[in-house]
Image (tube, rainbow, N blue to C red):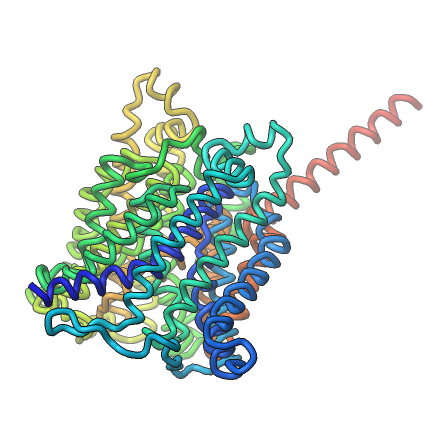
Length: 628
């Protein structure tokens, strides 16, 4: 019994830091609606800056002074980020905000390595809390007891701040209805800045307080951000009490899950998140939003089929790509095969986002399921490559059919968070079910047969399947099913009034998208010769979002260009510089700020403006001639 009590206290100590970070994200998300993927980066910066201040300036600041000053420094950095970057995209769709903050996260990862190096850093013990307290024969670090006591104190301070001050009233009002707060004459610009500063301060404080417990390393951001998203969604957007309860719940599940349910310990928190989203989408302590913002789709110019000239250009580009093995080496062909595979992956997500208006944050689940499906068939069953390629994506189809049934019941950010939960469940199973998936060791030896083993032949196979998949998806866009899906996206009530079953149409689109992603994953398994849990990880899901938004979500073919540019740039940068994340992140941020319509969308806008200018010029000329 004493052991379980100590384990409970350990969970409470972990909940303290998680609560600090999650409460900051909840406040920011609830007020500004910024999907701040960079919140984990501020947590990591807080830990690094606190390490430096407590090690090099301990004489001047002391340990606790270094902790507080580190959080303040990172909060100032957060204010600069908000003023320089986020203010420009507050009115952009949530997905563009996600893309910008993801780019910022990539930049911070390389910056911390430049400043502090790649090695783990071990912080010093907190003064006065270096020992342990005996509980019935079990030792509890005294610092853990300090964190347990600190958590309700911070909660009380935040409660007083939001319930007993005018600023807190404005923040709570903005969480429920930002437009009404603006109509009352409140300066939203500075309200958002102050909220962002507080949220970043809490995140940095949570990171700084962890240096006596954990090593500081450059992967802290991604490790914490997933759990923080889980806590915020379970607790409810904008609810500090919800963040506190959810942080305790998640931390205790992590603490006891490994003891009681060792086989599914990683899955538990995501199962709870999925159940909460299905039963109560706005969280345990949250409230329904006043007005949901729609996922970005085409809203200005109606889509049109390709003109004859555009068809010829597309066919010419495909022919040129097919001729690549005649002059390219094996490395270039392998890179070309990988780019073609990710075109399939990006096109599958783009179909769901642009036509269906559904933004999946966990689309890598179906990509990875397709890869594992091929690995199971090829290695365990010993089936031929063609049969495995045909049947492997069925696993992605089944996953999309099951998860999609629940996901399409929600919309907006809640839909996105539920897809993230399902993807993490798949990742957890792949990571922990070692007997079947190989766990972290993966499944090795998934090599193509002799007829497709050469880089040239595999490249032609990948290119052919990619061309077929993109063509089929484009045909679907302009099919009756595509029009029904777009009608459901643009006006659910009107589409229902004319007899369209919106949920069934969206579910069908989800299954189609997941199946296509599974096709990409099946090819990827043969390209790499192995399958690992990373194939279903959150990083790959975010990569897919980056490709779609980079190409242009409001276009029909943007995913193709976005995938080609992103993967080619990523592969090239990795081979050319150790700061590839910094360069790529900066490029992503620049694209969001300067070219929010993406590459294809920007080119189409320029072309439309030229056409409009030519038309106006022709009209002006004709009027002059008539006047003469």
